[in-house]
Amino acid sequence: MAIKIPIYMDNHATTRVDPRVVEAMLPFFTETYGNAASRSHSYGWAAEKAVDEARDQVGALIGASGREIVWTSGATESDNLAIKGAAEFHKDKGRHIVTSVIEHKAVLDSCKRLEREGFDVTYLPVEADGRVSPDVVRAAMTDKTVLVSIMLANNEIGTVNPVNEIGAVVKEMGALFHIDAVQGTGKIPFDVESSKADLVSLSAHKMYGPKGVGALYVRRKPRVRLTAGIDGGGHERGMRSGTLNVPGIVGFGAAAQIAAAEMPEESARLLGMRERLRKGIQARVSDTFVNGSMEHRLPGNLNISFAYVEGEAMLMALKDVAVSSGSACTSSSLEPSYVLRALGVEEEMAHTSIRFGIGRFNTDEEIDYVIDLVARKVDKLRELSPLYEMVKDGIDLKSITWAAH
Amino acid sequence: MAYSEKVLEHYENPRNVGSFDKNDPEVGTGLVGAPACGDVMKLQLRINDAGIVEDAKFKTFGCGSAIASSSLATEWVKGLTVDQAMAIKNTQIVEELNLPPVKIHCSVLAEDAIKAAIADYKAKRAARATSVPTVTATHEGATT
Image 1 (cartoon, each protein chain N blue to C red):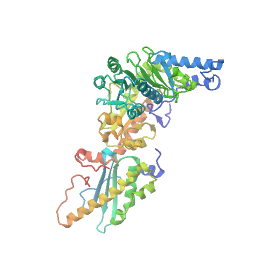
Image 2: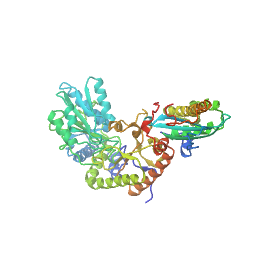
Image 3: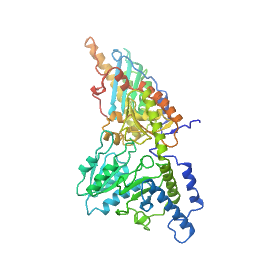
Image 4: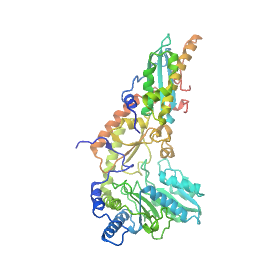
């Protein structure tokens, strides 16, 4: 089969919508287009029925009941609602929140806002392998801690946290446990009982569903209460008002059902391609370093640093492949990835990292194409690199007093 | 980020990539930037006794704009007098390559690299003039 250029290998950013998902959604634009909140006619009833089926499908993916699913516009909103909603509702009990430094910005920025409003937030460090230790969570918690928010899997380095062990600690200490599960659900086994999660953020478009729809799992037994962020009509048990995105929700449900059914086979296939990519690159390119745990990692993730080659220059060289970089130059802040820095990756290596996100629609042929392209382009850019030349000449780069700028 | 055509052109076909012998008395070497900041430029100028830049070479660790800025700098300095080369301003590079504000530091680095290379060359000449027999450069003048 001919390879389509550019090859999409940025599946942590978003995924292609599965054709089966599109198929499921289409009738809800033009035929069954009722408002799920309309109680007076069959258009509304049909929409409500479809939404409730999707609730069950999404709930089933994480071992929850459909009645515990609150629809949102996406995981950013889910994170905001979980963190701000829980903190606000429980503020008389305590004003301390625990999270980690490698969380998604939707979590970190929600916590920062709460800090400005007088909450205390502890940002836990991660181990060198990119994971949060349950012992570190325990040590950070006090009797004022109302919420702990830890991600299931990291979006940059793909490392998977020991959420079941962390959940046990959080429950023992009597706080609520929020998991941003956006990157892990549908890719690795996860359920709300084993993890003892009270709140779980989910996103459709990271699992071959449409953009613009997400969900927040809100535990019913024991009942978890939140202060709503959006008022107006009392939809979604009063936690999130607003007319439901019925086609999007139907698509999310279909995507969740496919993910649940195909996860074992698909994970093995993605892992096979990821290892083919890693081994293929490392066989041809010297001085590469994989960032984050290899053992506890999403099957489709490879975050790898190519010493002496700057990340953005690599992205330009890899223009036939859609990937991303932890290099400062790809962000407007000019700071290299805060996730890689949190792992203790040195700045010069953080600048050279490339994130490959392999997904459902990638093929072995694409992997082989990418291996060859990466090997050739790294060689070319190292020929251009004064650092590579100096290292080859036996100069220790650390012995040089570099002028910071 | 979208790159200008000129940046892409220099990035795809960088001019004057390579190195001269840094111990050659006619060669001035400028090494500017820092790996931790994501860009390092090494720019070398071969300057004759008449004070004319005869040749230039570079190697750059950095983004496409940094590579293009240094590639352009090597093109521009050739044939110039030392004083003319010293007068090249980063704003000219910004204009030629249509660099966006976030990439202006790449052009600053290229200007600094030219000046550092000339300073290295002048220091070598001064050292020779005071009849020091050999110059032992340690680390290519990175401490400039």
